[in-house]
Length: 211
Image: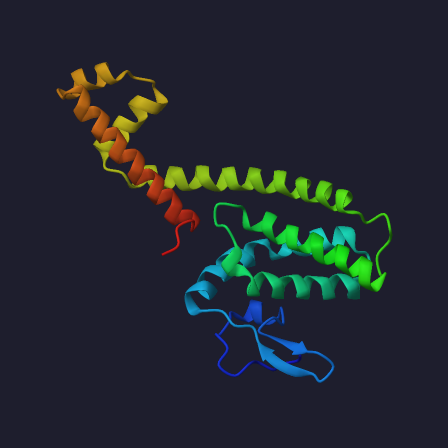
């Protein structure tokens, strides 16, 4: 596609332009059609896709040895992710969703083009994907821990102290109520509010909430 773009296409970051998924060739005629996506959906797609694209390439590369074939499949998978982003469930890791689509595309290529070995089965690809799932889970936990520590640092001193006493030092609600000269219900309400604030802060840091 070279440097062509679609008329009226949503502008993309330079790194994403290189993926050649703004437009696609529509059949033998070479007619260029636009991969449509609303502005809000586009704004949500890039922050999710860019961090996982290297792993997605690695996943496809682990299953497909031929350089040209693996790049073709990667470009096709990227286009599918872009077009079907409205079907993505944000409660599910984006990388796992992307690999699921990649698996279907790899198997389709093997069936239609015969460019991949018979040993490249659905079971083999699923097992390979599970290995990536484990790596993502570890990275996700580290990201959450880092985000939580940042959010805790943003709390007022008293709020931070109450969180530490309850969840780090295992102080009882009764002890905290006595030390703060508050009722049990008041302590419960304070802790509930602080948990909600921390949860929302962590979600913002990780980009998990879409408006």
